[in-house]
Length: 425
View 1 (spheres, helix red, strand yellow):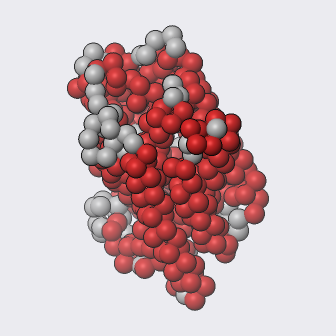
View 2: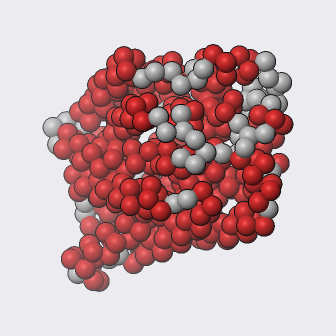
């Protein structure tokens, strides 16, 4: 594994996700300055993901054609502009405009994943993709805490800080990060026959992998969209408290990545670890609505909240990177950008679907009407969706065990699959 480029791309992703983490826990409070209802938070998350769904495949295709470095650079600069727009927003419409631009440029994670695929071997791919998960975890350690502290200075200050951080990230990338895509690969891509990336889903193992990935992100995004509203309702948490909670989730995510994924996961055990991660998610989602300090006492309720949050963080941190690794190994080197763009686009569709569901579930269909019943419905919906994904995980494990020759064929990125281009998705 080439260590130096991976260190640089990890730092790039980390800084990008610190900016992302700064914004998430403060949005439910930031919209209040515009007199918006509670369910508007779900729309802000949803429009961001909708833009990623549309533009992530495009960024992936462009990175296959022109290289990873220029696409990452332009998209990070775009993220900086979006943060400044949100910080300066004087109306709800301008806040939405900033979120739309953030979603358009936020598809760069797929390009970063393609970069990792470029510089890692098949055997090290899961560990390489785990760097994205570790960066997410670290981003959620520092980002929410920073956002909570800065919001005490000014509601807009976290957005301006995130914008400046993105500009610093762009400068680091420009001066330090080398290009990972060779001219030879670019030439092969240019000469490829145009074929739909959706053709990959004709392979049932890859299709099932993507189905599981979609379902768990829907479930997880329902939880993340609703979490701040849940803690506001049950614990009377403010921006600072929720910033600390998201930081705790990030710490657990990094520990799970270092202790579990990077140490114990081997290529042939990936599906079993995915199943384990899904099981933890089901338990965590199912436990959250039972957390009630009025019934259990504040300390006991807080302990249960931390345990349930930890289970969710560990489960997501194990399952998501491994599913991305399985998808990456299903294609040849020539189309990693397009494949990762396709994966992130699917994830963005899930992140659009989840917040849209949450915006209705958490408030029981009416603005500002959070109740004990709506909390049970919300988090048990996440658990039910994950149970479906868990069932699919057992099927995927069986396919991997009984169809080894087919899996080896797709993982080598053979001639037929390597000929598939990302020109049409």
